[in-house]
Length: 361
Image (cartoon, rainbow, N blue to C red; front, top):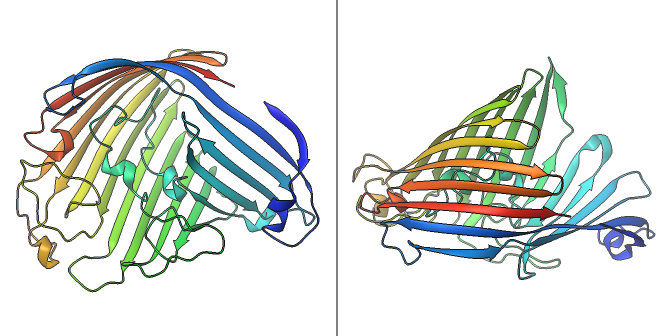
């Protein structure tokens, strides 16, 4: 729903000292009901059960044009309990491209994590933990600034580049007029490229690095991902791999113990593929599979990353999904299974099923 135009003087003066201008303000959102069941032998507290739930969200957006022809847009998204989930401000400078900053918005990495064609959610939705592929760039988005130059066209393809920089790679959101202070992290840089061809082929590649400033056994961070998607009529297929080394220097983890991205030493590598089919304009189905391998590196406590200390552990996920839309109302469902839960050979399996009724407005 749209709200009448109002003058956003504060928004204008926060960027440049100029007169007030009119901005379009809108509120959009969704409401819905979910029913979820879960079963398995992971021996977790939430391993078994079923429940109804609500899935509501509101997004407040504002946009307007400045005197020099540039435009500004701002958004704030809230959760079920009206808590802030993300916000961002984008300055679009015509042929010069755009600059944006935000908090909890995913940064530029959001265009390269979990980019497989699906009917409802990503393959790890409902799983015991997120895939490492879905966490690339997650520690670099807050406290950063991103630049997006205009897309380039060549040979029937559109090429889009995105760049991001953070003076401190600590993932902390700083309000206006504040600074990060002393940190174990130095700066971070990220870059991503997406090539979309008229044939239906889309290619994407992303890489990020962050520098450690404190002396010790921890190393610099590096994460990367690439994917390929192809759409032909009602069928879409995709393949993606990722690599994540957070440079953590902790004791190596055995194959019989759970691991966590960001706190466990070693390397996480994900390989996933999916296929989605649009039965008609309203109904779609998909199948996705992912293998996420944790490689615990030997000698991590001494800062070494050579040779294996323990056997690699692969956490596998599968998801079957469907979605049916009727105007602003939709019915969506998935059935997801995770094996070797939490990168643990004795972690067991868990199966989650969800049906959701959504209402968009």
